[in-house]
Amino acid sequence: MRTYNIRGPCPELAITLARAMEELAPGEQALFVTRWRYVAEDIRSAAPSMGFEVLSVTERGGNVEILVRKRA
Image (cartoon, rainbow, N blue to C red; front, side, top):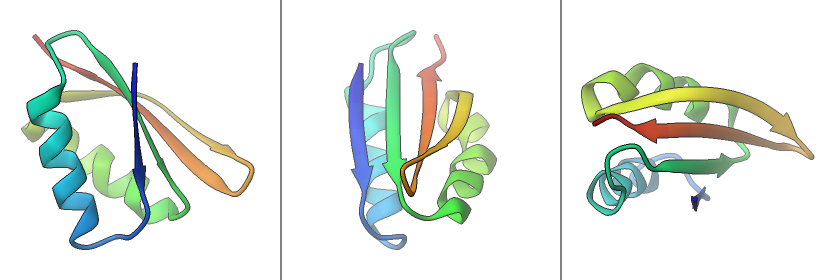
C-alpha cells in the first residue's frame, strides 16, 4: 500500500491525487495523510469521478488518514 502525504491544500492536493491516479493499479489501496479535515471531504467528494473508492477516514494524532482503493 502506498502512502501519500498532503502537506498543503491547493495545488498540492490536486497534484497528489493526479499522481495517485497514475501510480495505483486497479484494486490497489493507498493512504492519504493530511492535517486538514476538509481535505478528507474534498477527497471523498472527488473520489468517484477519479476512480477511487473511499474505504475509511480516521483521525489519528492530529492527522486525518483517508484510505482509498482504485476501482477496476
